[in-house]
Length: 96
Image (cartoon, rainbow, N blue to C red; front, side, top):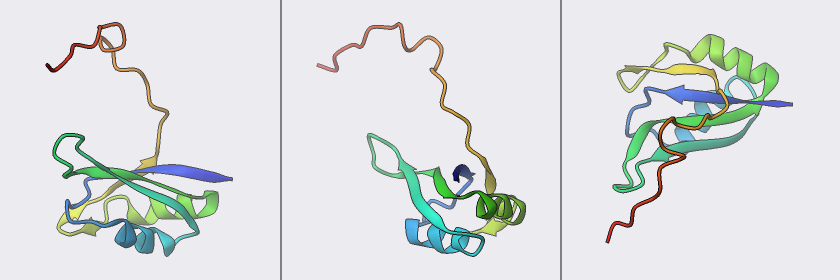
């Protein structure tokens, strides 16, 4: 089995390779996904890491609060995404 971890407060300069290497110290990393702003393409400062269960537990214990690029990381088990209230029933407006 594997777990999906939320990784927040990332430096905007963080790369997928850096995150893979950092989390790889604690277990096998399956995927790394760093989110970017849809309109600007700039990093949003958070992402997700999918890794083996034992490694995920160790990564949370060792990396939550750890400094990366002058910022304390937030690492915990990702929660399922929920619908944002007020958005799903609103009709989409065209930008044109």
